[in-house]
Image (cartoon, helix red, strand yellow):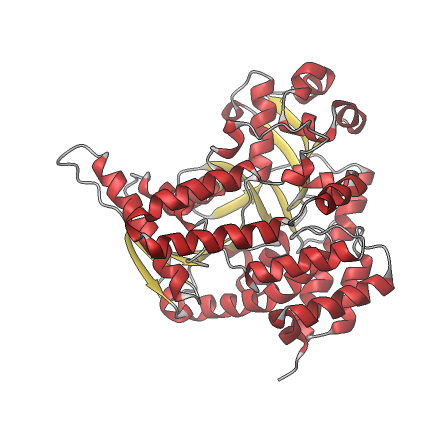
Length: 459
């Protein structure tokens, strides 16, 4: 099989490739085509993958018939897509420089500066949706039977936009929900594979509402046990009292909604935003690979560990008493494990239960049928099928409805090249507190990010 990776010069690509190297199934990916618009980044990641392959080969038994996937690279989108069985989309339109603008413009106006949540997520989505739609059109023309696995953020919004072209063959992935469910299961002394997960919401906006063993829901036991609840990441992040008040366990990104002032205060104390930190870190990484290409994988692995350790760091200063992320949280299968399980389920009909971003249909009452929601699914050769979940309680449903309405406005604004719809999307987001501010955000981001400004320039 052929896998095309869009954003193939991106830092996280070796994670996906590492999962492929460990796949020994009969029908597996034999060719990986990296696509990126930046040849320097492509060359660096090619070197990392080559050294990953060498390491994997050295660990195999002599005489093994194992073969690593062949890696090719191109700056041509059509060449990457033609004949692909799967397309993994991990693009960053506007680059990290665009992310820093998303974050800083919001922070300068006293709002949350975060790349997928709030104003930053809206401006990121506005410049990403048009590119995602063009990709979807080329997939339809060149590989109409391919499945698109979308990790491009904002993942739920971008997946929904691409589904308008390709239908349900576009599936969004994120590792946050399964990570949450795994932590809760471990705290209860269970293996997640033995439990049914009751999780529902949108990408970066979901709630764990149950963990069932047969007909017994075990989550109330966790919520009632302050010590066990406080031992998991979410207990430290949100506080045991708040989780016991909600009687659910929220996705970690809901920290930005429940503790907005705290998050803004912590981010503004830092010398650099997350985007600014990554700009410097990744520039140093690509430069280091250019200077010592024989050490490419070592450079990458060092930076990966630093990056994992500082993930969502602004939520873990005072609230979490300076604790570091647990090793199991940052060294687990991650999104690359979700992607591999999804591909194996479809390509080899190896049924899997995963939490995915898929078309709602009738799964979550109160949200449109064509809305992309994040829910547990059973995946087979025919693709994902959402599993039954509990309805969202009123406070959660209301928030999800408001954020989904913003998603739909962003998609419409990008398709229509409409600044008015873009302002409406910003103004209606629950983390943006003024129409006037929304107008200022769009104006300032357009001035700083050429790829955003280009969205509104009619040909």
